[in-house]
Every structure is written in structure tokens, then in C-alpha cells.
Image 1 (cartoon, rainbow, N blue to C red):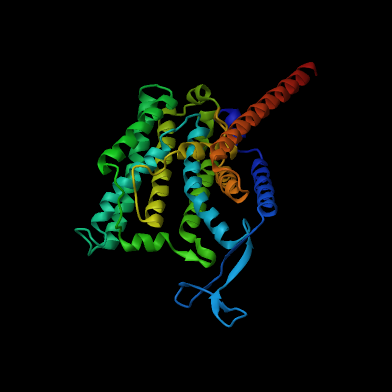
Image 2: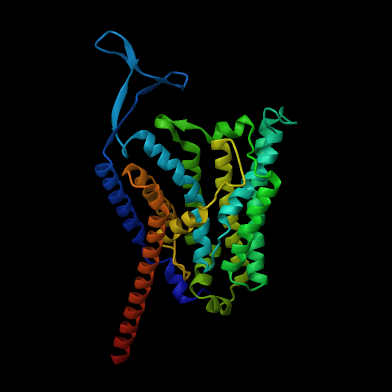
Length: 380
């Protein structure tokens, strides 16, 4: 039996996602109206899938490259780029949301991303065009996927085990492992970039539709979000995450094994970081120890903006996806509006602080309403 406060945490109708959708629409309108237009080269897609520059005849009869004027925000190229950039953060934000719902914190997510990237890259290079096993690219790709997910799960297991067994605050543990994992990534690569991966992996991840929309990162993001949403709201282990984050002591008295729940969310966080690393390997075709530098802020910001309460017990997978989209829109909006990019971290930090303050205000308002309701029932 779950604590009452935790059972109601996922049974009440959620209006926060609707509010986030409204924020996305407002941000989009601001960027579309305030960003203006830009002149870009005009391309056409050929039957073989390639893109060719369109040429027109000018007043003198000579052929010149054609251009077109498009809205800086509302154009296919920018929206495709926004979707792709959001995917990497959103996948990790879903895992981070699970951790935060359980009342924990994972500062090592960016370093796990880098470690998975470089270790998997070292393996994939052996199956690449110039590797020792270049004749087995499909086998190498499948092996690389398995190894990457295993490394992410192992990093999460280490974080969860130390938090549970050593009974040290997760902020301290993951702050340490953030440096350890990043250091290992640097040592094994000596600071060098790794490339030459098997073609099948790159072909699958770089699968595109019209307008250069990367379908694989988008599909994977939606699948991860849907699976996490079902896991949190429709399964007993997911409900236990809400219970532990809402009231750990009450959950323990209710018979919930708190330790495995904490370990589980850290493992899932590591797996989502590994999934994002796989997409990065396939899309960019390279890995380095500097990958994911500073991702911790963006991932945590996406989870918090998406409604995950830092006190635990509240949050959703859909909110994490929308939060990641908002953060990425702010980042790209700085460029579109012509603002100095040096302000990007300041704005993201301000958004996180504002989200936390709103969460605290919301909790205060709920407590006051509860006290008022109790007082009224007692008087009656």
C-alpha cells in the first residue's frame, strides 16, 4: 500500500503540461515575430535524395544561385535543427526526471554521456572502414549499441549503490562521479577525437525526411518519453518512485524497499544518457572526452521547467520533453533575436531559479489550502 499523498500524486489530472504547451506556443510566436527574416540559398531535392542548389537566370541572361527569404524561426531548416538538438537533451531529461521524482539528484549525467560516447567510439572504430574488423559493420554496430547501454547502466548502478549503501547525499556522490567519469573519458582518449565508425549506425541515425528533419532522434525521443510515461503512471515500480520521493519514511513503513527504487532511477538515468550518446555517435560520427560538457545544467533545467519538483514526488515524462523544448527554444532564440550568446547560461539559470520559486510557491499554496480545509472540517 502506498502513502496517500503519493497515490494522489499521479491520480490527479495534470494541467501543467498544458501550461508548458502554452509557453512553447508563446515562445514560438515571439521568435517568429521578433526574429525577422533572413535570405538563404535555395535548394531542391533530387530523385536520389541529394540536395542541389537552384540556379536562375538573371537580367543579363547569366545563371546565378537562387535565394529565398524565410522567417528566421519558422523555416524547415531551423525547426529540423531545433528538433534534433532538443532530442539529445530531452532523452536525458526524462531519465533525470525519474531521479528527481524519487527525491534524488544526478550531476554526473553529462560525464556518463561522454564516457559512453568515447568507450563505445573506441569499439566502433574497430569495425569502421579502417578498423581491424571492417568486414563486419552490422555486427560492430549491434555490439556498440549493447556496450553503450551497458556502460550507462553500470555508471548509474555505481551512483545508486553509493548513494544507497554509503548513505551520502546524492549531490556529493554524483559531483564526485561527474569528475571521475569525465576523467576516465579523457584518459582513455588522451584528449583526442575518435571517428571512423561503421556505416550502418550512421545511416540509421542520420535517416532524414524533407527539410533535413532527423527522424531517428525524434522517434527515439518520443518512444523514450512514452515508455517512461507508462512506466511512471501505469506500473507498480513507477508508483513506488513517486512514493519514495513524496515521503521516504512513510514509503519504508508501507513496505517499499527504498534502496532498490533509488538504484533503479539512477540506472535508468544512466541508460538514457547512453541512448543520447548513441544518437550523438551516429549523427556526428565522432566522439571526444569533451562531449556533454555542461549538459548537467540543461538537463536539470529541462526536468525542473517540465514540472519535476526538487523536493521529490512530482514530475512527468511529458513535462521533461516539453521542458527540454523550452530550454532549447531559449538557447536558439538568443541567436535568432541577435542577443549576445554570452547571456545564454544566465537566461537558462534564471529560468531554473524561476521554476524552483514557482514550485515553492505552489507547495506553500497547497499546504495553506490543506490547512484551511482541515480547519474547516474540524470546526464543522
